[in-house]
Amino acid sequence: MDRRQQKTRKAIFKAFRLLLEKKRYDHITVQEIIDEADVGRSTFYSHFETKDMLLEAMCSEIFFHVFEYDPCPWSGRDYDLEGKLSHTLWHVRDSKNDLSGILTSDSGELFMNYFKKHIRNLFENNIDLFDAGVPRDFLLNHLSCTFAEAVKWWVARDFSESPEELAQYIMTLVK
Amino acid sequence: MDRRQQKTRKAIFKAFRLLLEKKRYDHITVQEIIDEADVGRSTFYSHFETKDMLLEAMCSEIFFHVFEYDPCPWSGRDYDLEGKLSHTLWHVRDSKNDLSGILTSDSGELFMNYFKKHIRNLFENNIDLFDAGVPRDFLLNHLSCTFAEAVKWWVARDFSESPEELAQYIMTLVK
DNA sequence: CTTTTTACAGAACATATTGTTCGGTAACGA
DNA sequence: TCGTTACCGAACAATATGTTCTGTAAAAAG
Image (cartoon, rainbow over all chains, first blue to last red; front, side, top):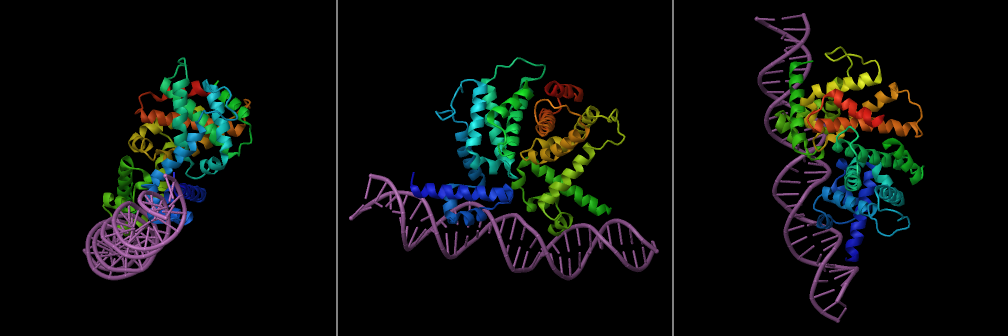
């Protein structure tokens, strides 16, 4: 990939992140993004068709790393669900520079939704649940939401607990 | 209140609801709203300063009824938390014409947030919780989210369960 | 029923955003 | 060194915004 493209892409992402910390997603204009990123109007549109596409691309890039189970410092036992969730927590904290500002912003829900979808898939593909008196669909939704909300709470408090502590809290709930 | 004002207000709300079922909140323009509602541009702005104000007003109006514990057909025991939650479920189902379309729309989150805030207050003011090994704040957030998400799930499935059944599901989770 | 008040429509307005197109420039990769 | 490609800047029409004005019709008050 051309260095200029990378540079431009990064500049736009950075500007977008900066603006997201200041105002809501739907109040941010393309004009403000290109002003902040200091790129030409036509350049922006050659990279992203719309503002929504930019959001999608940024989500994709951010969460790609979070849900990557490649070899990394804390790639312990990520063969089962609990291992993967724990692994995810480490990733979230590791990339906090990107995530904390975004998830706690006014438009954090947009990113949370993206996060929830992945989490739900994780549960759906790795869970082996006995029926506990509630519909499977209902339970699945509850578990993924619980995990996602816990992470959000954790991020908002600036990771004041260790991943293990948080994992323990969550386990206390879903027990 | 002037009849003309009521009529205009209702027309705008209706148009807004209709549009929300078709497209996302941030893709809806004031222009579309006034076209759909068939009111003059100046009229809209004499009622609401911005689109956000319209959203706020509509949330306020919708949820005012939901969290109203005035005498009504199912106003049984709403003196304790469980009674109030149950009462809320009845209200949600009763006003389904207003709520189901909105909560299941692409911008349902906006209304869910409003809903969650009230629910959280309800828990906060009525709960008498022993510490269960997790921070009170964490637990409070979990409970309100669980309830809100359950309601969302319920609405999305077009109230296929009775309020009692749903309440039972929720109790199974938070037990 | 008459008078006064008030909400509305419609138009005009300056300003801002959008998404596209073009030609020139400079950085890139081979 | 040379061809390729990303960029800038400007211009563009189309649309949205928020305000202000005048005349009209409907409401409330008397």
